[in-house]
Amino acid sequence: EPEVTQTPSHQVTQMGQEVILRCVPISNHLYFYWYRQILGQKVEFLVSFYNNEISEKSEIFDDQFSVERPDGSNFTLKIRSTKLEDSAMYFCASSSPRDSPNEKLFFGSGTQLSVL
Amino acid sequence: SQQGEEDPQALSIQEGENATMNCSYKTSINNLQWYRQNSGRGLVHLILIRSNEREKHSGRLRVTLDTSKKSSSLLITASRAADTASYFCATDKDQGAQKLVFGQGTRLTINP
Image (cartoon, rainbow over all chains, first blue to last red; front, side, top):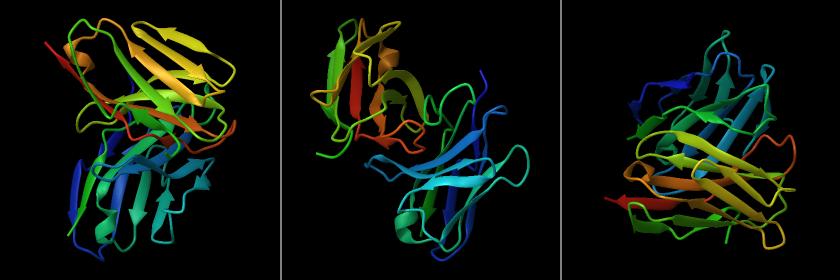
């Protein structure tokens, strides 16, 4: 079965550094998402992306965050200047054009970001 | 409680028994979904129930939705050790909404 792949699986960075988390969504999917899960807390929505633009974002997704689909396969999340509180598991997800947005999301295995 | 609260927070049962997990939410919804997360892995979609549906089945899974009580339950019948995971409900507020709100999850342990 096709799957969403994320790299790296673990990323350690120093506070204030920029990080780019990479995702390859399922090839025929059109809706893309980033969620995050701080240890012991709920999975939180960050941003959704469709037709090469952000379609919705949460309060968490401030100016430090950006997303990009640089080519036909990759979908990236950039955190410009990381803070300690950005430490979390970041999940990329995508959904099929056969389903409405938000129905049956396919999640990657996540990137564990640790900000020191 | 916040949108999408599951109970119990943790459930431990013997293999072969049925497991029931509940989810409550506060606002009106378009649909409700259940996802499973194995430790350290991504979430896997299990089942979706729409706001105009009351019950849905998929294999050993049975989901109910009571919009008057703003609650849903997930029943796993004849549990197996491989069902050990965390289970989350997720709601979206409007049709076409791009944001899912997840609950805290129920940690299910199936003892052999």
